[in-house]
Length: 303
Image (cartoon, rainbow, N blue to C red; front, side, top):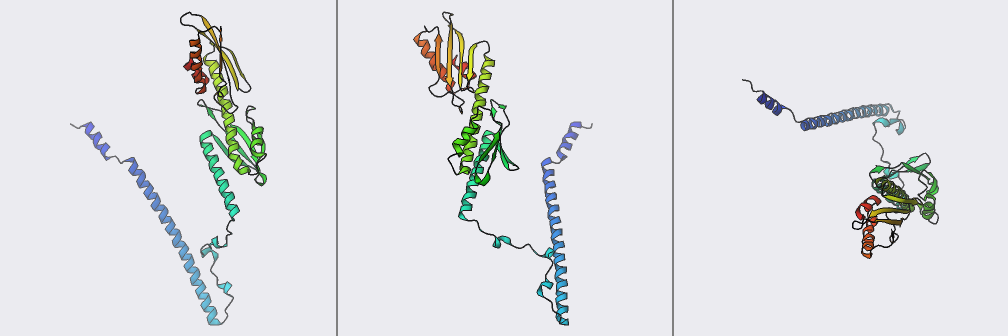
C-alpha cells in the first residue's frame, strides 16, 4: 500500500531551505546590480572614446589645413571628463574651529546617550531647537513635554516650555547659563538636570497616587505639599497581643530632584505615645525601607 507518512517525509526533505532561497536571491540581486554598473561604465567609456576620436580628427584636419585654433576649442566635453579633485582647493580649518567642532561632537554624544537612557530627544524646528521629554515612571509613559531653545551667536536662549510647574525650569536656566560664557558645555548638564527634576516630580506623584489607591482604607490624613516634596500620612495598626489600635504618623521631605526622602528627614510619631521602647525602635528600624523603596513597597516592607 501507499505510505502517506513516507510521502510526506520525502516531500519535506525535498523542500528548499528558506535561508538558502534568501541567500540565492541576495546573490542574484548583487550580480544584477554589478552587471548594471558595468553596463553604465561601458557606455561612459564608449562616449569618451567617441569624443576623443572626434577631437583627434578635428586637430589633425586643422593641422593639415593650417588653421589651428585656440587650445580651448579642442577640449573634451565635460560630460566625459572625470570630476576634479577639489580637496586641494579646500581651506583647512583653524585650531579654533577644530576645538569648537570637537566640543560640539562631545555635546552631541552626551545628548545622544542621555536620550537613550532618559527618554530625551531633540530636533530643529525653523530657528529654534525643541527638546522632547518622554519619561517612563513605574512602567508607564508620561509626556511628551517640550522645551524650546534658540542659539543665536552660540548663546542659549530659553523660548518656552510645557513642563510642569514643579520643574524649576527658569531657575535652572539661570543657574547654568547666566554666569557662564561657554553655553555649549552647559547645555547637556542643563537638559540632564531638567530631566531629573521632571522624572523626580512624576515619580513622587505616581508614588503618592499609588499609595492612596493601594491602602485607601488604612491610610489617614494623607498630605503631599509643595509638588509632593513634603509627604505625610498616618497608618492605623493593631497590636497583635493587646489588640489595641495604634496610630503611626510618618512624615518625610524630598529634594525637588529626588525620588526618595532626603537623608535625616524621615520622622515617625505614635498615638498613643505610650508604646514599648522595643516596639518603638523596631518601627523606626522598619521605616528605613522608605529610603530605598517607593512608598507602596516601603509600607508593605515595614508593616
